[in-house]
Image 1 (cartoon, rainbow over the protein chains, first blue to last red):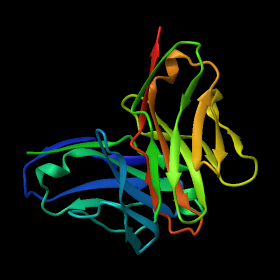
Image 2 (cartoon, one colour):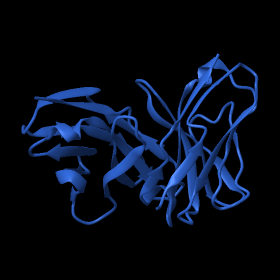
Image 3 (cartoon, rainbow over the protein chains, first blue to last red):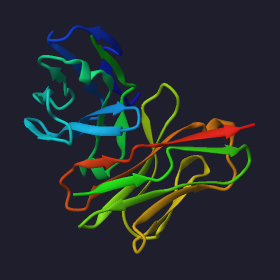
Length: 114
Length: 114
């Protein structure tokens, strides 16, 4: 089954404790991206990657890092989480053409920073 | 740079009635346009997209949207809604120059009334 898998699905952490949200896709997609969803703000793109070793900032990259060492994986790293990073996070992937092709989303990761 | 405005944050509508969800965009370059749907506790999935050709685009679940370049709009319509259409709907835009950033609107919650 074609899917984007992200883990953990739910996490409560403390301010300053580094964490990584993993993301993996099994569709051999070149394009992968991370979004955060906040009430009243919709979906905002954090980072995206058009291929291995190629990453670019989205609209809200501050406080986040990503890496793309393998085609299937695109982890999101919060080096020093803060309460304003409490949010619902989505990983997504897309085939040839990137953002204009159909984007497939993971089920989301609820992150709470206290 | 692009921007997307979804004019209604919530739309209540009676079951079997027609519905229109409004989306306007702003861009200095030509764009691709999308509608995504998020059912409760799920990730987003593509409803339909406009890339080129006919300005009337048909999607899944009986939805359609019309691209109007002069009014910079991409409104989503369905002639008769069902309780299963209860969801949040997101309009999105990406530029044709393939910079692969995608901008989502803030979303419109569709409430189906029995």
